[in-house]
Length: 312
Image (cartoon, rainbow, N blue to C red; front, side):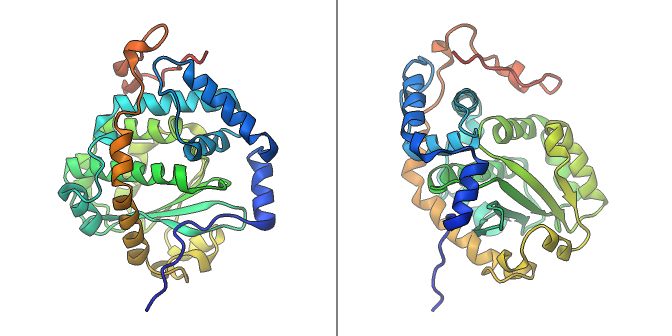
């Protein structure tokens, strides 16, 4: 009988200390900083009065304990929850629509371990070459759902994220179904509305069509993130960046298999069903925002830039 491994190994010892330095975290001040954020939330009529401690701590860490940056990210997070119902409603992983994707379309588990410098690695790959337009949207929804679970379960924080995108089955039919608006909404979520420190993106099993896909997405990425994209022709090139032993067996490593890790995350998503349901009402109310309400057309305009939210 195979023993179920820990879903997200938390940093300890010297690595924990090093991450505290990188995140600018003084644990003696955590209660004070949490209280300041909670007090700020209570004064924002358009935002929820309070939120759980775990997510708030993850936002503080992802903002390097800059209270002003944390406020901006929280405001944008709750704004995107209201502005993007396609991502933030109907988040039941046991529903027929999401179950089908999880069972036969994609795999995208974060890996249990951490790199020597404290970064979390997530590997995403398709397992079926055909996705319709709605399934593409639902795949992005599932990615954000995993991100929401990590807001709670990254209890000690990590020193950034590394994403590995396996493009082996990415074909031309998928490109024709990509919506620029949906991709931009997703990229705003990732870059502006979540406390992610995106350190590296590695794309493996590439082809000319993959290069077209990367060029399609690049305009929606910040310049610093565009510079962190690495394209590899062989899987073994990954070992220069990620310890081989922490990768799944599918990629020459020792960390279980992609199927087993994906199955664990599918179960975790289903366990959070009631939590996701409660979160649907925890979002920004633009009618109550002081000053000018957020203009969604402005926010998502393909030619426009991200709207700067005013933080009191």
